[in-house]
Image (cartoon, rainbow, N blue to C red; front, side, top):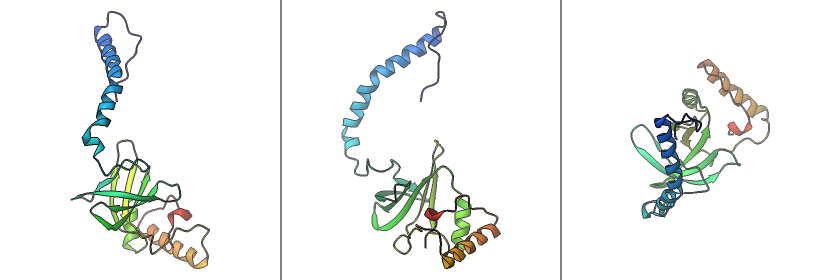
Length: 178
């Protein structure tokens, strides 16, 4: 990103004029530089690029950086099933959100009501990428309002969350697996 600068400066302001000239020159070179970048062998040989999925495809678990490969998107949401690049059998669930309660997730996991959280990556633009174990083969997302037994289990999980001092800010069918 470039700094914001006015294009209506006084003719005697040599610094502003030089900044404007530099910006215009950079804009003139931009298409050629981008074309050269995208035609380089280093860019074209990246097997992990998947243009139909989000750009982010790696996470750090505190020690090791893991690359993953997206498999499918969940119901047109910002949620995906993926697997680790070096172990296709190790499935993960990837979710993008603007805010996420990492400590609350860990608390619910400790009570057995959430998948294991592997990583939470926070990006400069405010988005958060949440990586957790994929439990979709064992469970399914709730598509309708809960029945009595599911309602009781959901209330129990929420009560435990509240006892730990947390509030779930987004209780809805797509955030509940049964």
